[in-house]
Length: 496
Ligand code: ADP
Image 1 (cartoon, protein in one colour):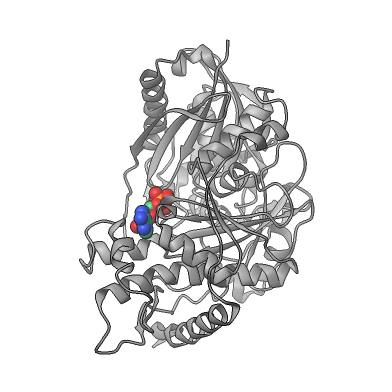
Image 2 (cartoon, protein in one colour):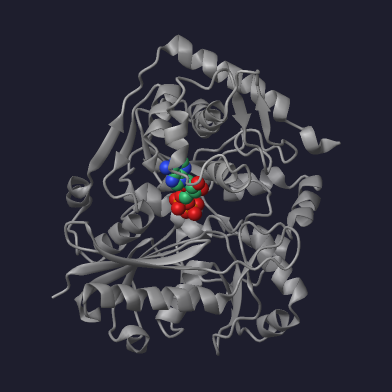
């Protein structure tokens, strides 16, 4: 009897394993931190063996915790940090170098060079991406150019290049499969999101041998059984998606116009656009959405610093002792007293894409207190999200009806209320906020018939809180207009 779906959520800073029961509820979970490696300024790496080992230990821990036998698992779904790039030897599974993490800037100058050659438009049209160092193609190119063994193995057709999903599946299947799914492929800058296949021009641009890349399989459906040596049974792997697309699926955002925002370190807002890829002219990414049965696309916008600004208040400013205290302190004042915080600590993302913007606090008076600054910092998360939503609405021509929220900072009711106020639409927080893992579980469970259809899954999904807008349209627009003035002051600051 198969009673559970096992979801693996391999994130940037941690690996997690969560067991979901047939009602879509969490039966048990286990997590482990993943060490970050910073070999030089701007570079970020992970040890591929540490990624696999931490994920493997989480699987064993969650089964132990729930006293569940591997035979009781109907299927495994995988959600993973996106764009992080690995290389290993096909025949021995030995990693050739550390994984280059999505945040790593080592390929920034290469991307600038390609931009100067006028290639940005071609890249955008084929891949839906902006020419930025985040994505995997330039990282794979770097590996081929800087790791001699990778070139040697490529010449012998014994090289695997892949993202974290591919690496986990290789390890789970005893290296029987080298596969990925369209959501992960759409973040490599090597994948034609319209034709849904590796793109010869992009492969040629980065000098990537096609034979080294994984086979692209659907996000939902049987892929391969796990090697029984891994954790004691042959269990079908039947779901894969990049973490943000998994969260969109886990929020049951399956129709055009449905959108979710994840409030973590940064914010990632994805809006489903249906069966057609919507191009962007204002710096949103066009990306493949996870689907259990048909082609689907999404627009994506990113805010670089969201919860990280709260961490800054806690760790660098010392005005709060815990993230949760930000709400308590902010509630001591009725509003931010005219103070605006622009948390452009690492530049600004959508729609500004300004690497030279810097953090700023504006509107200070002798009456300003730390409560005002904390409140303004929380508001900045909601205001940056409004920037993204506004850009999306302009691009898609459709107004959002509501925003579904997840991530650590949804625990802050004041932030969620402020978000509803500043968007003028309801903000909905589901009862299961582990939506990334839930999305991977849904994809796997639907893929093997553990859940018969999407309707069944939809009826399991529950709302925990619904925040309705409580301020007038005038107040909303006036606060947003002031925010835009504040952003203008923060922009281009570091250029000199
Ligand atoms: P990530 O997956 O990016 O590591 P999480 O989803 O775990 O992030 O969320 C952690 C982030 O949420 C931290 O940046 C933290 O500052 C923020 N956070 C957590 N609780 C609160 C809260 N009550 N109010 C505001 N921010 C919070």
